[in-house]
Image 1 (cartoon, rainbow, N blue to C red):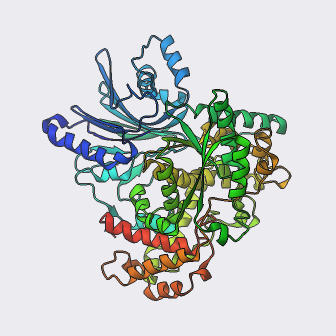
Image 2: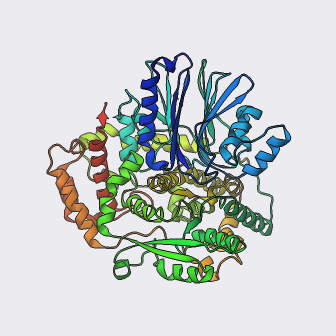
Image 3: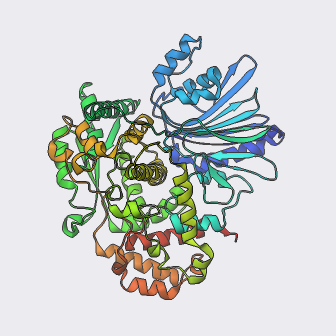
Length: 619
């Protein structure tokens, strides 16, 4: 796994200022070095600059990038962040067409696939990736992103020169001379109205965009054109329930097995829930065939055993179920704990990892856990995305979500407004912005003729989860892991699983009223029933009231600092009233876990982000 960056201009000769432009590529690499601590490289010619930092996982010896190839008089190059899960199938297909290979890695396979099949090569790829291909014969830069949006890829176009600049993270673009951390009204709405989510394709900073999942961006003399190579389609599901269970089980096992490919040892995150347990079970089973033992990790917070209080969202603690799974798998297990102080202190590193405010302590704690895992492993598999695909969240099941004409994980914007000044709220018009983004997403949902209103609404909620909520969690997983040089793989986000499950009717997904019943049936034989049918309990959170007090103190410090950049957006009296009793504002404002403490943590992140990045507000 890596970080990629570069620039392209079909009308400009970058070699005329070679030293300066090589320094720019080096600066872009340095900005993303945490994504790839093992190796780095830069390439520059007349119209192209390519840069990459590498985390060595596959083809440890000959996998250096940028990789430059030759095909007669045509010049090709690639920088690539990701993993290809059908490498051998594609390699064999290319060999049959007369291609030979100098390396054992997937980077060369991708480059040769482009040379053989043009931009259509991407439709044959199964993997997680963000990549840039240089084609000198066509004077074209091709930027591609995987179907599920697992790997990030940002870009901007300089209006003064038409230069296209791209990078795995926003910080790579900000390292390019002249690109400023400017935020306009739209960006402020992204932060305050829908954050920590982002509108698909939006980079929050002014004129910065992200290549959409399942799309490629073709940059040529005639302009820049973004085109979909994959989209979800709606069709009638004709398989019986028994056949659906069998196919779902096959797809899950196949996805996990493919994503175990690595030249370094792998591990898994194990929460004791059905999702991570299924992934761990398949990994353990495969490793046992090789006389190897799976290493698993679980996460919790210091003092949770004493402070835990059951709720409808978190009905039980994870630890007892983790213990059962460790015994069942025979895995080598490590229990990790995060303290209140670490969780709060790492709110700032979380911003640095995202270059934006993030999921508050839900993000900072995972950042901490990933930093510990990365000391022993470079690759982990997780159970992320199963809830979005199989319908595990409460908003899939609650009647009020069917009636709400908005995003089901944020049905009430009032909690977001509680600290903001009336003038700022009048300027933002939060309700209008959310309504517009929601309506635009609903308009994208692929309809199915003849579907009844209830199933059509479920399809909408499913699409919204894939397009919005899942993207936020995938973004979180990428940044928190890659910040410490850890590659996190998400088998449930295999595009074949998403395609198939999108059209499975709800009566199969939640058969008998059981959440994720289809997944549980598909997992029979892999797990003990008490794990397989355990009620969902989301990512753990701290129950230490001292954490809330610590955050309140830091918010008061912001209020007392006249230089604080976030102060113009706040109503001091509202904030002080909130700080007197934050628990009174306990309703989640994003998802299930982000309530009053997370609102304070998010405000702290916004303040730090504006200071650290020197954010410029353009109204």
